[in-house]
Image (cartoon, rainbow, N blue to C red; front, side, top):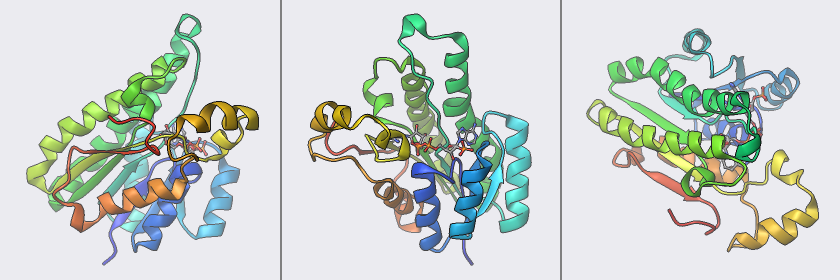
Length: 241
Ligand code: NDP
């Protein structure tokens, strides 16, 4: 029987590529999103993947949403914590709200989601949690104190939880993408992309969302059972953690 995979922020960008790759690998996939109904509807129509709307920053909404996913597709066996936002500002201008929003979604959201599936994974003696962190959580990035802190927090969370899940058959791993050619990155001024960003990437190009998705499919599989607490850096050689 197909395993059930839930991808947060699974309707756009990297998350959409992850949802599709997991579906193509034989999983029953649920894609969560926060508020962009138009993008979610388009994604659902094009892929046939079921979409579910709630904010990962809201614990009770996560609990209810996961119950709905379980009702529709079965208990979640693979959780991909991909939903993420940026609220960039240099620290002297960063507002408490910009700090809180990013921590609430990118770090507390990962706690909320994982906490709500953990019991079922322990009961099933199987689980795969894959956290999408970032190169900027590894190296830090000016203008992103909030984002870098949250994404670094995700890596600590991954390593701690890997130790707790190991005996229960649950692996917990992280992926740190570098610059990936999503809508957001492609919207950057072409001159800035070509003259400032791409020269920092030794392979000489942006990554593709599908390249991150393939890492997720690998970590989600039965064959990856000996890999836990690990971080895959997928950044074109830009940074060696
Ligand atoms: P996008 O902005 O393209 O998509 C974000 C997705 O997350 C959307 O589906 C969005 O839903 C959803 N989302 C945002 N907030 C919430 C929330 N509170 N609850 C549920 N869903 C939410 O992001 P990317 O594809 O660029 O990034 C995906 C992940 O990869 C993020 O964690 C990001 O930090 C990380 N990353 C991205 C890099 C890049 O180069 N793009 C580099 C390194 C890491 P909706 O459509 O409703 O808004």
